[in-house]
View (cartoon, rainbow, N blue to C red):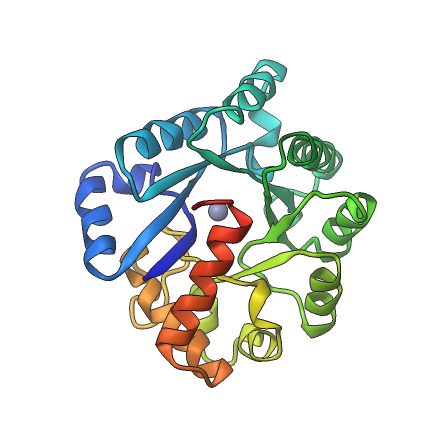
Length: 254
Ligand SMILES: [Zn+2]
């Protein structure tokens, strides 16, 4: 059994075949998926999908690239959604200075708000970091020492940043990039303690080799799992067992 800890199943890319995509994931042995919201609409849709599908769980939040179009009322509605029993995570949130530097301060304020929700609800916070390693680690530092758990999804930092994040109790998510040749993620993932590693697709984005460049979907998680198992020199069984255990632990799924 594999667990896809980060997927955007509510994205438009799946509008014509969402149920088939979920069935293919189940057939491939991916029997847990987190549908991650990126704005109010997608967070609500993730909750609705999780209510309908046993293997799907929801996360609610406002993605850093959508912060500029979110109203105060949207933030209030997201906070209410976090009380829903199908919601197992806060996010996605974080900082993205690659797509938009001008909204950096607003992204940071939103990220802090999501971290505070993580603290008040006990839910883990799913963090997006693009070209913002120092900024993201700075916010996580402010929250270290309390019980808020962060998941650095699609981890792209180096080994030193990984070590710091792990020492702060973070979980690190690895996706399709880990299957790319010359990816730094290969070396990072090979040296980590096994109890902090998660695997993910980030579907419909970032498809693993040999699907690179096409629409990604949760069933392709098998390819990423194979690559991570190979980099860590462990069997697929071992990798599947530990990463699924980690996913269930951090999202508190029994
Ligand atoms: Zn995402």
